Image (cartoon, rainbow, N blue to C red; front, side, top):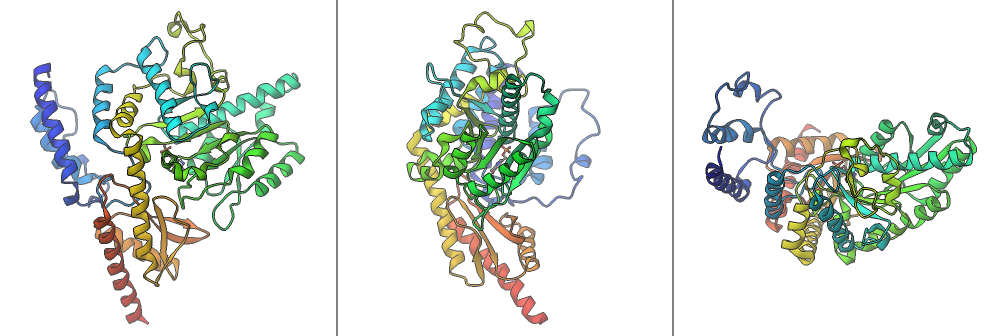
Length: 482
Ligand SMILES: *Cc1c(COP(=O)(O)O)cnc(C)c1O
């Protein structure tokens, strides 16, 4: 493809995308394919001769689209949202074109510098304390990770190194293996599975603290666990608190947990993967009270802030904790400015070496929506969740299972788990909307998350009417059987 054909095909692709987005409602939100559906639809091996763009685009409809779950359909209410906006998509095109790999400042100065400034913009926009920002001479700073999972892992690995260095300074005879073997990290029993996984990957024991009846982790339960562990000679060194848990969007109590971590010299990481976007609205910032106690903070603009995947924003109060932890300096990555203290080499802040120019999409979205536009977007989703909540409340066959704070409603039919499993199955078999379950205190629960950028009241009303009809069918059938 030469540049003149690219001009033409680029326009074709933009048209295809705009059509897709405009007409997405008419596509079935969840596909009707069986595992292995795709292989028979395409040849066994790559073509010897190149094919045309038209041929491939035809196959997008024939091969790909039938197997797509349409996350941006306004009938998609599963998981949490994944962001999607035109400014972010356009910026991603530019990122692909520049195609630099920004592992050091010198490998593409704009890639590094725009990222540092964008993380400051974003941090300010959500009201993060000054210490997390890089500014011109701050000790903190932000970086774009691929996912919240990687951010948690980075925080845990940095904490591991920080503690090991400290203990070895105090007692040079201690071996690293000995120290790491005695380390303990904590999260609530409601934390995301990626937190447990960070423990497995890093070789640090991860313990779950029991949350309360509202799925909140408290200081008292944490304190009790770490005192018991200290008495056994273990080394508590990391706590991951969650703001906006995946199952029910509960918020751990930072005002209790934070001071304990600071007193005990324990790294406090905050996983606000979903809820963090809401802090762009001042009225939701009460939910992150106590954030100032944290060593690191993370949320995913790629979930709820209109920046397409992947863009997970991760800040640390002391960037030296990260940089010092994993430094390796082969000759081919060295450059003239690295010792000047003026530049950031993001390769030290992450697990991979290579990194894309992801701050472009953050820049485009922040500028084209403006903080106000993003606030309106969050508020609209929160309002729509309230509309759904009101519907559920009006039908006394149903119950609400967790406080509705942002865009997630956890609900179920009063009755057995089996009954609710049947309801979920009916919903997802009908494929008019898509919803996933969760488990809270051994109860099987339906999670209704406001997801799509284009979702409106009419879609919420449709979804609820549909759920009620399926519940009628289910309960009538049960009635007949009795
Ligand atoms: C979605 C979610 C994650 C995982 O996010 P990734 O970016 O896919 O790793 C982690 N924690 C919470 C609370 C989440 O909701």
